[in-house]
Image 1 (cartoon, rainbow, N blue to C red):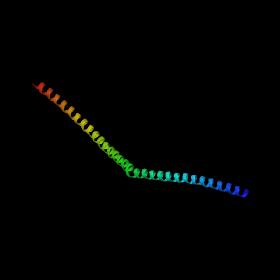
Image 2: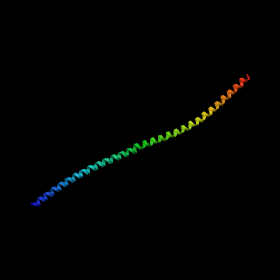
Image 3: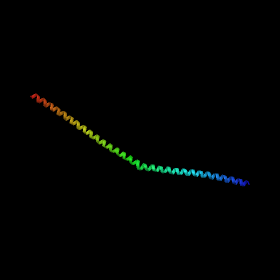
Image 4: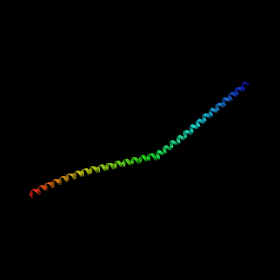
Length: 110
């Protein structure tokens, strides 16, 4: 009789342990599924970065480079124009001085 009780106790313990192992296995399965889903999301994000973000970033950088080059060209043009304006100003002043001298000579002879 005592052997029957021991056997029943062992059977009950074995059954409970199997139930707990099943619960643990279910939790691990859930974790694996969640990890797989997370891994898929990370892959999607990586693909989006490679397919959308990096090309857009490169386009922005190319635009920045083009703008910088154009700005440098415009700066050079403005500097050249400043020199030309200074030269024209000098020539204008010389011409005005010549006109004044000519007027003086004309009025002094008259």
